[in-house]
Image (cartoon, rainbow, N blue to C red; front, side, top):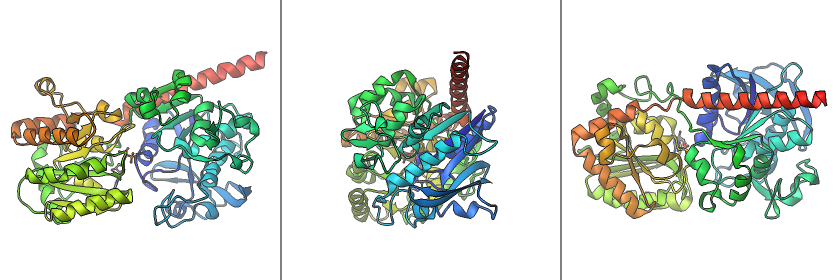
Length: 488
Ligand code: ADP
């Protein structure tokens, strides 16, 4: 089975969040199921050095008015088609925003290019290679199925929604510039309140829609989490399913993680505490006892980081310390920094993105806090489990699904792995933090929680199996339809 994946982020080359982790790990996990994945990726500056001097597979003289070339390269166990289009992708900021955090004005064109090139590969651009299934991710590659259907290509498409909040909405007058026919601009197609929605285009033309947890798959059918697309999703509910994300157990492995001063396993969990001091030193915090709370996250309203600001004083006043690593909304960043200034030695905020620090934080802290207002899956809490760091999470989406709340019954049954709270506000988070604090003070209970957390299995194997099954279902249905067409 040959799958063509199309994504705007791919770990370890370019990452702003969980999307990259998933698109980077899934191809490797699918290999065990006989699925061969090739991934289409924009040629960002972080990606271009991977290319050799080999000539491109194809040259595009006019990709939305720009010159571009398609290269093939294998790196880090991943098989890539890289779109070399300097005018579109050779930028010094992030994949979506400039150095000041402002969206690039031509994102409509940049990600339409990703979709169009993917569609053309699906439609036979490369002699000798074509996919059985196309797998697109989020709005950035969601136009792929629109371009494919417009070109008469019926190869099955899976669209995975990693976060419904980002939809790729642009003015309707771009339709012609996008090379899309007026037929696509309908209420059952791309049209969205007078604009074009790339994600809606994908949702209405893909053969299967997945999202990254079954709970989120249910939640997005209702207005509270549907972000305006609940009606579209309800119509497509028959092809929507949730497949919970896994984690890359080689990259997030406390036994071998080279970012940790001291490695450990569930069998010598005492060694975890040797990472505490280096962590406190790294973030200039006092070295006294007391639990270390941490958050590694985009600093946004979605992630409830404003709620964390609200309760930071309480964490500190009970003898805890708080470390926050992240970047995001300016107002939340400023509020966190201001709060840290009130608690020198007790609270540290590092604005920025650092993979190595993220690993050290997961190993050296005691409690990871995730007060998300909505959370399609969430990976941070899964990494925390693997590192014996106990998550305190809001009861929503993938968080509700992956963390077993340490209520009395779950503790007695030996299955608890963390603390869930509800409602998602200051009072809820305060309650979750108090419960975690109380458990932390009883070493026997804490140790049990840590062991149960470390033994929770969120490997990709199970989830990759579900994707492989879905691909197979779609492939069989496609073959049957083609055969019927030939007979007719
Ligand atoms: P998102 O909604 O941002 O994708 P996830 O929990 O699914 O949330 O994934 C977030 C990923 O990004 C995790 O791998 C997390 O460790 C990482 N991450 C987030 N912020 C930072 C940061 N500032 N530095 C390093 N890694 C980060």
